[in-house]
Length: 352
Ligand SMILES: [Zn+2]
Ligand SMILES: [Zn+2]
Image 1 (cartoon, rainbow, N blue to C red):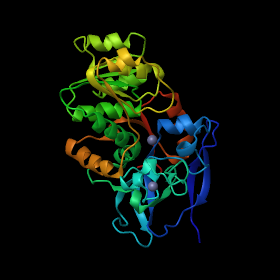
Image 2 (image 1 turned 30 degrees about the horizontal axis):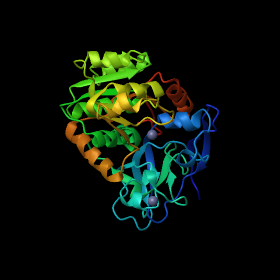
Image 3 (image 1 turned 60 degrees about the vertical axis):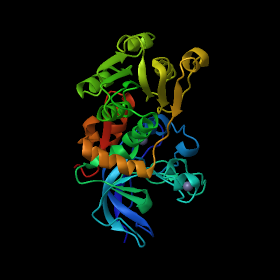
Image 4 (image 1 turned 180 degrees about the vertical axis):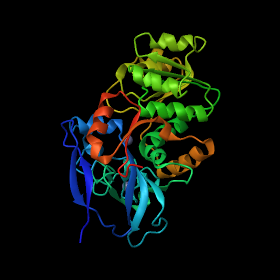
């Protein structure tokens, strides 16, 4: 006797297909989660929704969409060691083999097993459904103080940003530049604030996104993206530039701006995916003793520490969710996210 549920698929022509599929049954070491919140990521739009462009780790294999799920366990399979029915959980969005070097470091994102590495919403069923089958080892416990919408954003955006900020180190000494004020850039603003940054400058082409960043108090100044950005950043930093810059745009010009607007001895980190960048190593980084970092997602252990700190800081990622939709309206949700005229967009299957 198999039960049915609604689930959203992305055929790749800027539409969403809702289908009835069987509710999965948890096997050994697996749990069944009632999905409460599932947010849409920039990468879903870039690599799946408009067209199936992704390769390798970003290759979409026609599964249930959504890699930022958060919900409550309703059933556990045999052999679960820590999590139980009733637990509220975040799903780390890549299920790795568990035994390669990357998995052992907690970075299942870069699991090297071609056979076992499968990301939720890319190569295995994701969170845009009423229920999600997940492996126990991929779960992060969601503290009571955080909402499901908070948790969904830890699953990808906030975790990814926190990793990048830990790499470059952010504290009250730093003026910070954020290029790209989509949900990831907004998360960067919120976390830099809690880490002590008193001067945060944001750049985006979209007026809506600049407004959201200002309205939520996540940036002290916002600039419209343009060729004069480096000078504008220097103007508000005593002519010197910022100590830290974070690119969340993936855009070539924005990345070059972030590199050039970083001051001597400063650090810049690239988080936004895709695209390219051109800069002149001698004047742009070598002579100014700058360091450029790359950062890809995060580890399960840092995600666990992040949720603890979100509670300590009373920081709710939910605050950057500007729109929420029922699963039946997933089509509208993806359409809005693709337009960029929004903050974070969420689908809440149970309407909570
Ligand atoms: Zn994501
Ligand atoms: Zn692995």
